[in-house]
Amino acid sequence: MPTIKINDVALSVTPGTLVLDACRRVGIDIPHYCYHPALTPVATCRMCLVEIKGQPKLATSCTTTVPLAPKDHPEAVVMEVFTNTPAVADARAGVMEFLLINHPLDCPICDQAGECKLQDYSYLYGSGDSRMAEVKRRYRYEDLGAKIVIDKNRCIHCTRCVRFTREISGGGELIVAQRGAHLEVTTYIGKSLDQNPFAGNVVDLCPVGALTNRDFRFRKRVWYLKSVPSISRHSALGSPIWIDHEGNEIHRFRPRPLEGKETTHFISDEERNAYSSYNRTGRAPAAMLKGAGASSESIREALQAAGSLAVIGQGTFGCDAAQRLGELASSADLRYGSGGKTFAVVLPKYQTSADGILNRRGFMDRGFRFGALEELLGKVQKGEVKAVVLLHDAAFTSAKENELLGQILKVAAFSLAMEVEPSDLGRMATAWLPITNLAEESDFIVNHDGDLRRYQKALQPPKGVRTVPAWVKELSAVPVHA
Ligand code: SF4
Ligand code: FES
Image 1 (tube, protein in one colour):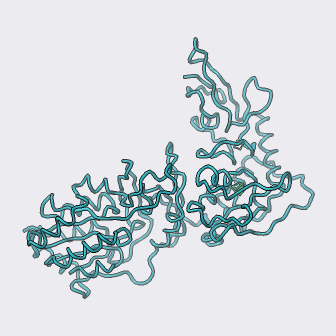
Image 2 (image 1 turned 90 degrees about the vertical axis):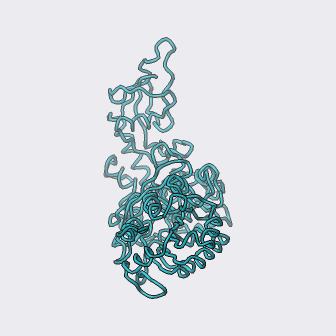
Image 3 (image 1 turned 30 degrees about the horizontal axis):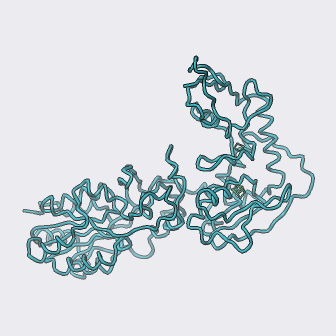
């Protein structure tokens, strides 16, 4: 592998590596706006300039690649890069001054404040002065449909959003119109981002707060939010996300890109908007037995007295929940998997599976058999299985499966449903227990690509609501199969 030197530090890198990425590997963060690892580089912002020995002008590190080494000397130093020279500092200050020429000083009301690259780089690399004496160019806010609002005054024309709609989501709704000082990002006449199921990503991509999400706009200053690593249940792959929350309330979901995993840079609007479903409103539901409020002890006694027990676990829950639930079954062959939701595949490169049961693998690894509920119905009808414990979320069950589960619960001598909120199916069960939702627990899944993804607790569950492992521990306080 060829060697390059960055500020005199030698590093072996694969030929073709971007200088910007090579710098990152030695801990040097090169400021950039237009560069994004999932988009074609265009080198328009000029913020990533570096000095390369032997080259007369500064070079954009987001488009300059490490060359091949000579065949007779494969480990030769092929490039010497400097990121800390006066020429580089001058260039950065100059670029910042240009970018800020028309940018308003509206940070106190801008949603991006606190996570704005223009703020950060201005502080780190800007000159602190502006020679702009002319009146700034002004635009009014513009709706790009019902989901996204653009403030063109803030735009620095990095074109990340435009490239996203062309290269990733494919609709090409956004364009760069006009020329020179009148350059503006807009939609084609009559087009909006409403039909784009991945539209929310343009807001994450925008480094300066020109594109804002109507749902989050003016709702929260970001420095009040705490970010907890989690996953999305509303995709087949359990997309890694950040849960941004404050005061036991979630305010937004954002993608949480994983190093080297390009598919983790973006999430769909369905995943993004699902955050509100994890905020509880009203009183938390309480444990029930035969339609009336009950203590967990009475449910435990009833379950233990019922006889041979089968468990049905929906593969949208975590592996720890699956493990503990499986331990309740009277025998290993009485663990059944459920869940029938599928997702429409709009972007095959990013949605490599349509199976909405994101932890199917994790459940199968723990002995849960999917597609065998009719077998269980037969066993319940014959009286071979007396009790059934169902771990369930109605949003991920198909109509056919719902009917089958209903029949099982009807015939079983005793049934217990564990859900976040009682569903019609849950109400049919003899007993019901309230469980934590994804944001209220820590666990992990193994997705369809075989990737293990952990998620952490962000919210405090209400009193009386417990995780599946905690309920199973309670239900097994005295051996179930005594
Ligand atoms: S709106 Fe944002 S992402 Fe789009 S070009 Fe302007 S600054 Fe870049
Ligand atoms: S990041 Fe290299 S020119 Fe914009």
